[in-house]
Length: 310
Image 1 (cartoon, rainbow, N blue to C red):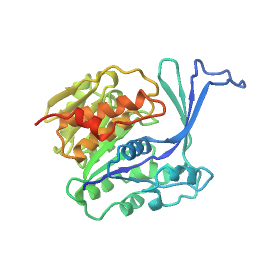
Image 2 (cartoon, rainbow, N blue to C red; image 1 turned 90 degrees about the vertical axis):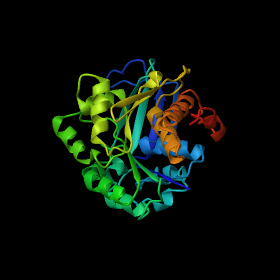
Image 3 (tube, helix red, strand yellow; image 1 turned 45 degrees about the horizontal axis):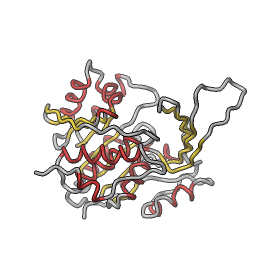
């Protein structure tokens, strides 16, 4: 059976809601709800895969403070392989607002210490045909990002299908950053972005032109996927566009929506389903995740209901 390896930022999330207005400096406000849970782009995706019982491995590292054992306990099939970094655990405070938008405040912590050597040591020396590696939290894993060109080339050399979800760069997009990314896009089969990330990375006038350009820079074996929220998802490959719409849902918690999409999309590819089915499964997983509390994910039978007949 093929395996999906999820690489990158697994950290602690403290979610608090609902914040109407930022408090005045020196004052205190009380919010109605808080939840402490594992998070990070790689963490959210791995949790969805675990819930759906998809063969996977979360590849990361860990800090050495009071949060370390708690965070590792949520990834029992993976954490035993995580190297220890002599620093605090990475923590993000997520504040939700009445319009369902979010604000995040994060420290640096252990995710900035994850290295290419750490990742390669946790991956098989040779992939089984169809194995996938997803790299997440690109700009947050600082030491890992500097090694991306060589790292992705080595992962491809080992025979893996490579997918990347860069996320948003904390310093914003720049010409220099786009040039750095151009160096390693050729080693990437699938690029999984949201709309603003697509526009920021390609820096062209329209979403279509941005996604088309990015698709041409990839290996040619996959495509550029754009997660469009309530409008569903789109895929560009060989200058051809595919769109799958989403059904309206009552939104409870949008944090990790894109990561949940990644889990559904790549699960379909892992099982050699069509690109159309992959888009649909990504939407299905994300839709149930953001509309449930406690968070739930589709089971295998639910996914099969939205399977393209080829």
